[in-house]
Length: 254
Image (cartoon, rainbow, N blue to C red; front, side, top):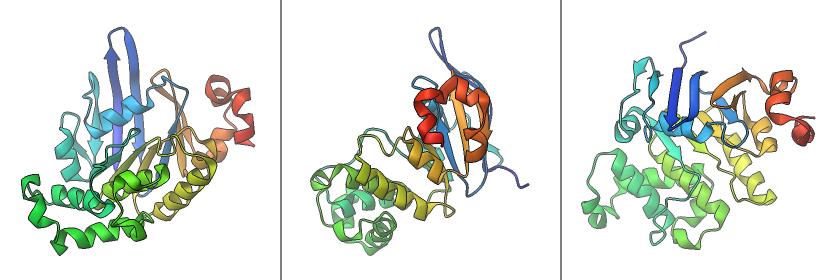
């Protein structure tokens, strides 16, 4: 088996007396869709923060494509090919969908944002921005202000922004948060189209989406990975049932 694109070894992070990631180890294979699940407070978003560089671990290491990135800042990880969408929207609402994505293209090319106005008509920025919008299913909404997009479309736009960075690893932190069933279904369909084209790590509470999308799942409880495997193996894992899924999630597993 080839070397994992991302390897996490014995990662630990404390906030006071709270051990939010606790000797956590994890491998992510190239081009796989890997879901992180677990109860609230299990350390999932804290792990994403550490993979992205927002938080630095107290101990342990992170290797990306075989090179250590444990202490690298967010902007350096972006250059290396790690992109992320957030739980809470971070769009520029006064800009169009196209302009939001073109900003990401501009950033990935290393240009200063102070040159944004003349760059707005630059095809070197707008052409890849249109491509990212198309991949995210928003090609017809390019000229719409971000403020006027639906909640689901805003999440799609955030994914388009991440795709514009040409990621080697895409981190998704609860992309279905706040969505109704129809919007969740649409976003699941979008992610299914991206599956296999990108290496994706997703934190998500929507079990229907998780089990339909994931090649493998890792289950976090109290800052540790208690199980990693394909969906069928996770469904049948007694430790997962006892520690996390339990009776309230039985329907999602059958």
